[in-house]
Length: 212
Image 1 (cartoon, rainbow, N blue to C red):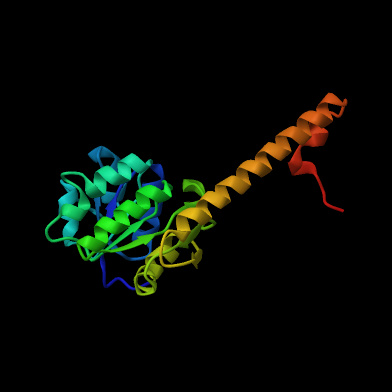
Image 2: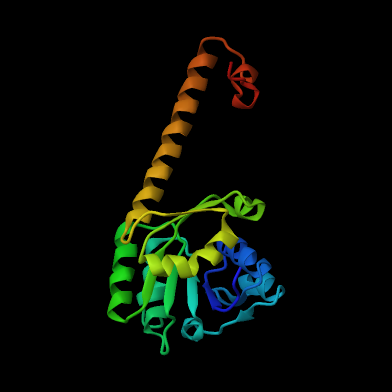
């Protein structure tokens, strides 16, 4: 992986810490910020620098954001102390959060007004899957921005798919979550039906089912 870019990381909760750790292990220099500074300690122990303010990340070439809600994304990017108001501002912002398409579109539009490139790159998986190397990313935004960010995205997940120039990534992630929800509900209904008919719980354990 290229290490030419200095990477900023905004959001170091469980998922943010796992993804940032993967990038550090692949040789990138990171500066991290989190609303609760102590949550960045595991990353600083690995060599990351810690920013006191979000605006300190403006000196980075690329800033990744990983937050837990649409409101959080809007606050850390567009708020009074937000990333997009930093001077200087980063050249590229890559959002890996799972948030609404409307929030992502608003941040993308505001970034464009400030000549900041924006890439939406939600992650499918959890912190354990990131650590195991089994997570996946779907990304959308300008193709050249995707190419620049790709080495760092591949440090997080071995499967990285480019799907368009706008908000396609948010839609794909929504479809993925919908599919998982439908499968989980179908398994629950099938298990309940079988057990009501007298089938033992062990017989309905999907881990023991063999496809013939």
